[in-house]
Length: 463
Image (cartoon, rainbow, N blue to C red; front, top):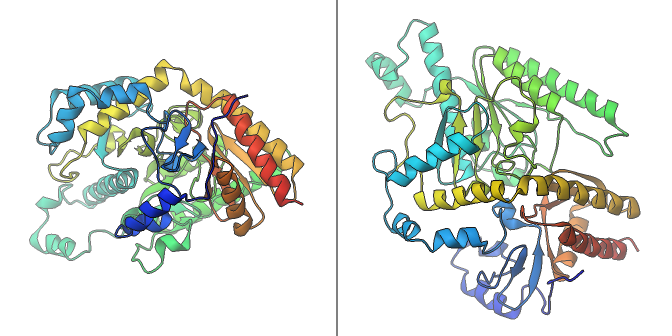
């Protein structure tokens, strides 16, 4: 097997160090490990400005879908239509072009999750989650007003009630979420986020209830009964929370895989029972697919793997779609003028890239590749854990959402550093987990290359 991995400098390299120092005005500069050469990078191979080349299992926290400089995306970016979309921004709700109409039609016909009746687009995944939560609260509030004999439209309320709303007393309703969740950094999604203290410290939040997410143990075959009990306990906790807030639950939001929270999984049965509980409580069932959408599970949408008896009410998207937003069933397709609106609400240039990604996934059979190569990768990670049980445990994953645990945060960070110095770029999740998010085009040869490096590093660390 031939690899393109090549690391000839310390990391960051001298040229990268110089650029990082120059970029210090940017608050984000403290996070930078490499400076990418985005001309030389190709496919799954990330090149940096010092001539180093990495096998990329990071994909910029899963933003990447087709690897670097994919011909289908380069062709779009070089087109006249893309140039016009880039230099002529529109307030899409009021002004758009024929392309946007064609885009939403094609997404509805070929790529939207099952049962969705509308799509709402914003710039990024966190905004998409915020917008979906707002849609859930809007519908919940309208229903409550109608049930109490008041008009659904808040503009038809009397002056005193309108004044109360304007004084930040819009609702006492809540959104229920799960421990370990990450739904974004806006103040709305942050109130449903429970993965890391650093995300929430010193920031105001709604006092929304949270439910314990089941803690699976691995290997699954060994702990099947214990994991089932964990799911039952979580659902019992959910039932208690819904009962305690009866009539006031606007939404129950959950990730098909808790990515930032440590790559935590649950069974399809668990999600079906969460949906049933949400429906019984009169709440929207919201699937946050910012991390899982657009292919990394081996299905275009993880919702398709859950065998839900009916579609989710709201499904968020982001990352690999190159924009954010949500899909909605007709009950949550907000129609009142001004209720759901942002100035851009749909970047045509990003939509062109997102559509090209969706078409390429379909044309090139990339979902099958993710399923097959992902299963192979997981099996190789399980072998690694079996060979190095003192340092690597709990290999887990679905498709290209893959991870394993290290004994401590320091050990995890040391492994990531050693692997990067050997030309394999991975990242972290949870408290002590190694997270891998291969581009959807990654094949078995690259998996073997990566596992060889991880094996070498783990052997060093277990001496």
